[in-house]
Amino acid sequence: MDESQAFKGSADVATDVANAPLALRGDKLVKRFGAVTALDGVSLTLGKGEILGVLGDNGAGKSTLVKILTGFHQQTGGTLSIDGQETLLRSVDHARSLGIECVYQDLALANSLSIYHNMFLNRELVRRGPFKLLDHKQMRERAAQCLDDIGVHVPSVDLPVERLSGGQRQAIAVARAVHSNAKILLLDEPLAAMGAREAGLIIDLILRLKEKGGLSIIMIMHNYAQTLDIADRVMLMQRGRVTYEQKSALTSVAELMDIVRREYRAMRATSAP
Ligand SMILES: Nc1ncnc2c1ncn2[C@@H]1O[C@H](COP(=O)(O)OP(=O)(O)OP(=O)(O)O)[C@@H](O)[C@H]1O
Ligand SMILES: [Mg+2]
Image (cartoon, rainbow, N blue to C red; front, side, top):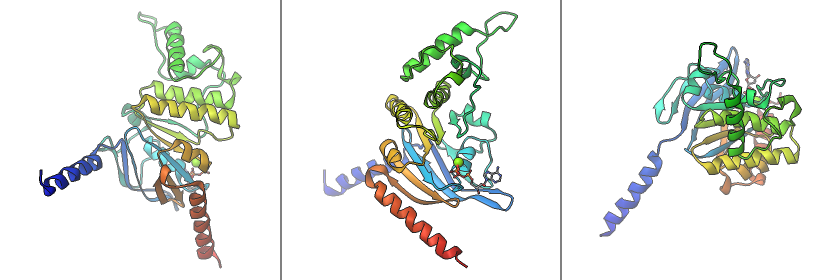
């Protein structure tokens, strides 16, 4: 093989990697709420099997971005591609049908209901026959199996969710999303208001889900160190824009803090009277 052929070969490999279908791609996403521009041209990619950590100040637009990716809000401008197909997500149900699931910042669990019931909320299993009775036995067994599969341990799936700790509840919410065959999982501050032990439980769960494969994850986070520990790539947002993006292995807490500090200084300088 001469040199030009060898070069062509490696270029082809590079092109293949670049063309590998992404789980998700957003191009110049804009979201306005009246006079407020929550997203001001956000572009992002999520590779298959990748974990992307999104960091940013309060009001940066992180939750708005997630809500667009789940079909809860529709973007004012820009495009979204899911698995290589340009798609306008019409609703949360539409996004779900494409395998996009979200665990929201304010968890949507029914606290007085049992763990297994929560895992089948709005998609309860019914027994065959004319009376459409709920199939509690099936739901119990499947919920226990699903939790076991992803290493979430609870004393009994019959326990009401209100008897669980914050971390366990978050784990149930994640398990519920995964159980419904999610391909893309969006986590809006999965570690919010958690102690170190509870956060550890969720971090382990996220890492186990990654190991199992087949799932791409975007998680909104506040803690830089935890984000770099879990995510393959990090993205910083400020005032509706992406201000920095890097592979976790190629950046550090110090660098991220430095970037944010500089952004603040620039912002203060421009908004000074
Ligand atoms: N439904 C809405 N109607 C009007 N404005 C909204 C709405 N949702 C968000 N906003 C505004 O959009 C901006 C971005 O909000 P968003 O909730 O996305 O921020 P965030 O980065 O998730 O912040 P936090 O870290 O506090 O959760 C804010 O100025 C917010 O007030
Ligand atoms: Mg938010």
